[in-house]
Each structure stands twice: as structure tokens, then as C-alpha cells.
Image (cartoon, rainbow, N blue to C red; front, side):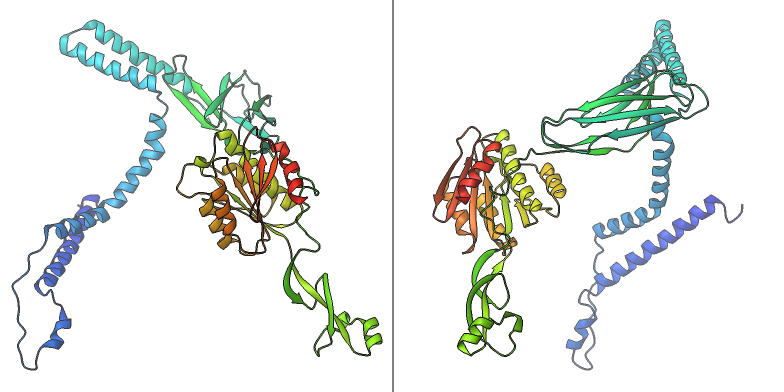
Length: 474
């Protein structure tokens, strides 16, 4: 036998594994015989002999651990090959059999075994019929179909209540006619079925479909797959033709208008007590100091006083909005109230982005992307509420640390948040920052109230958001 045969290679691998395991066991025994190690030799007096203790016992758990590790290293390549063969050849064949097919196959085997054991010819006949049905079912799924499938969604981002329309265009790209078949289109947790007629070469068949958008969600549309099955559905063969597409159903938003957000200054900004030598908010005149910019010299005053005078400005800052959206469902009366809170936060954030203002949106699960209105609405669509220990008060404290340079802060909360909690939220806001709480309560009349320096706005309908913001700006 040649030295390169599989048996010899397996024997060599076993020898190497055995020698490696033996070396590890010897090293473990050596460490057990000298538990103190060589570092303890420095404590011996010169000339004193080193005491050798009794040989330590090798723990069985260490042996088993080393043996398991060595066996895993030896069997890992073989397991990888077996898994690849299973996924590539075996599993595609087994996946063709439906649940009903497995039941019929198990019944056929059981009937054949009963017929052999007790001599029941009827049981053997029934088993043969079941096997014959399986053979006939194979003829319905063999063969290869040549489709050209195009899945087209008119829009991949719609708002709640808008129409989401798409189409499937199927063409026969082969040189022979194709038999009637069925196409399946998974839409979220549901599946739509499209029936294809007999198609000639180069023939195109198109179907339109509409996706309901009654609630905010990210709906996975596709992949489109063709299904070939026998009349009894014992065998089902599926072939994927397209990639899945994400359909974002954004929360409903309303336009606020510039007058609704008039309390946010853009050109003049929010004034501070710090003085600057160059800004847009004029403060006073002062004497010229070497190093000042000559462009800010006030020449009329200089001519009148015969002394160089320069303009001095109040340092301003650009409006920076921060939105605190609580996603703790314990603070909301119903799911509709929670969805309204998301729509309120999305409307305010979208307005800020359209006016090119700095924006940060924070929830209990972290910040949302605010680079563009599209990113904001995508992340708002992915927001999922849940009962949690962190309340709106905890979120307000995190917001003060995460966005220290905010000039206007919005707290979007539910109707279960009390006035005491809102007062605590306002106390976490640094001085000089305007804070507003938007309290959603479906059916309530739009109103405005003040809790110390906090302005509390009650919104009963999303269309009332612009009204209550105008009240806050008044």
C-alpha cells in the first residue's frame, strides 16, 4: 500500500494528535510536580538544597479538556466538508419535500413494514401507491425554467396611508415555450401569489400589486420566487429570481411652516452674555486696542471724539434643536398615542432639517440619524416602543450630557408623564436653553401651560401641532 493512501494519512494524523496530547499531559504533570514554580528559588539560602514535594495528581477535567480540544482540531476539517456537502447537495433535495409529502412518505414506510410483518397485502398495496405518487410528483418539478423577472416598486418610501404600488414583469428568455406556473411574492409576513400563463419565447407578462400601508413599518418585499409543484403538493420546488427590497412606511408628518417655529432664531441666533469682536448682534462701542480689526472701526465716532473707537458685538450661536423622544410604552395610554408622539417628533425634526438647523434626536435606545430628512424618517420608522425602566426623566438627563450645546430642547412624552416628572426634566436643562414639552393625548384640545421655565404644549391631533407651536412662539 502506498504511503499516500487515505488510511496512512489518517494513521499519521492520529499519531501526531496522540503525541501532541502526550506532550500536553507531560507539561501538566510537570506543573503539578512543581506548583511554586522557579520564582521561589530566590528565597532559598545559598547552599540549601531544594525540597522536592510529592508528585501532584493530574486532574481528570484537564485531561478531558485537552482531549476534547485535540479531537476538535482533528475533526474540524472533516466536519466542515460534511457540512458543505450537506448544504450544497443534500439539503436542496430534502427541502423540495413538503410537510404533507413527509407525512405520506412516513405512512408509506409504516404500511410497507406492517405488510411485511403481518402479511397484509392491502398495506403493501397502499405503500406502493404512495411511492408511485412520489415518482409521479418528481416529473412535475424536474426541469429548468428560464425567466427574466423584474420587481419594481414605484416608491420605496411612503408615509402611513399613502399608496405603495409595485409591478412584476416576467419574460420568457428561453427558446421554447414555458408551461403555466406560479410566482410567490413575500410581503412582510404575508405571501402574494401570481399565476403565470403559458408563455412563448420572448413573451412578457406583467402584474400590478398594491401594498397596504396602514401602519408604520419596514416591510420586506420579495424575493420573487417561482414555484413548481405536483397537484397533490407533495413536492414543491422554489427558485429565487430577485433580491428582497425594503419598503419604508414612514410616520405621518405635517408641515409646520416658518411662523410655527418662529421662536427659533437663525440669523440673529440666541444671544449670550459673552462679548465678541465680530458677530451680527451689535452691543456697544469701545476704545481701540492694538490688534483689533480695522474693519470694525466706527469712523464717525472716531472723528467726533478724536479717538479710535471700534464696534463690540454680542456673541451669538446658531439655533441647535435637541428632541427627546420617550419610547417607554408605560408612559403612553395606547399604541395610537405612541404613534402620534413619533409623528410629532418626526414633524419637528423634519422642519428643523428643512431650515438647515442643527438637530439631534435621542431615545432610550440611543440617538437617531439626523443628517437628512430621509435618514431621520428611516430611523423613526425603525423605532420600536417597549416597557422599560428608563423614563422620560432619565432620557432628559442623558440628553443634557449628549447635546451640551443645544439652544432649544423638545421633550416629546405621553399622557402618563406627570407634571412633577416634567418639572424634573426641565431642571436637567442648562440655564439659557429654552425647553418645551410636547405632551400627546389623542382627543384633547390644543393648549399651552407653563411649569416654571418649561412650556408644556398639549397636542390632541397631529394637525394641531402647528397651532400649539404658534402659541409657544407668542
